[in-house]
Length: 113
Length: 112
Image (cartoon, rainbow over all chains, first blue to last red; front, side, top):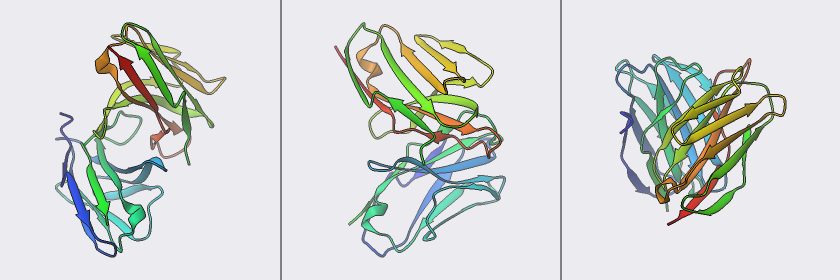
């Protein structure tokens, strides 16, 4: 158990809908990363937060947004969902977000039908 | 875009044999990490090697780093069926934002 909690584990929804994925980092970790894993794109970095502030942005679509709250949990919001958004979404956390190993959650499997 | 790329894409061996996976990357790095992923599960960190290090060991794992060739290798000795998983390298470009960027992984199958 990595100590990173992601909910829900599975999510099935329809095209055009909006969903929210939640992540609770390890106790004491200030930095949260979101990654998307799909068969065709591999593991893609989406966005990183540190202590409530956005620190780095990757291949995140404009339809997607995220935030990190004062209690350090993070949410990834996916809207106007398309079939191609079906993927495994991972959250990872680290203490400071620099040169450290990532602790991954078990992921949220999103299926858009 | 992928910074690191693993080779081979798939590897099938017998229990007891050694497994070697390679990772090549494009730009200078701060460090390189190897992760393991069991099917559909979260990634688990194996080893982090910094750009000024050449070799690290952890149990049956040995990682080498050759910054002149921009490559790394992960050796698993005396493989077990439980080692069956996908293995990923992750690099963060030096001078950048320290974001680990992952390759597509090597799928390892160890037959009992």
